Length: 155
Image (tube, rainbow, N blue to C red):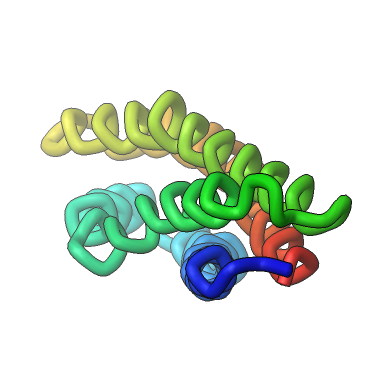
């Protein structure tokens, strides 16, 4: 049986990861398809604004929470997890960390390159950005959804 502290961390991990996965899924299924219909100038301007606004305080709490809270649930519960709960939390944590690595190594450099291209050729900037960013985003969205499902299983 899990301690109250471990249970609290696990519940918070599931909530935060669900919110984060929902944010990622919304970008994948609504925002990016909507932006795809814009002109190059409109698309690059919109993505630059998103990239300025997204890393705000609420997003950062979610971004950090999807790693910190499953880690806390896993490590505070060492010795109390059963054969499903422990592995589910650990794999959820691995999914979240992997998604963050994709973000840091892939999406953020693309965001920075897009920002640096402001005032230049929007068509070239979009061509260098959109397909690669979307591919990376699909992977990190799948990872965040997997992490959420695993944490719900662990509950």
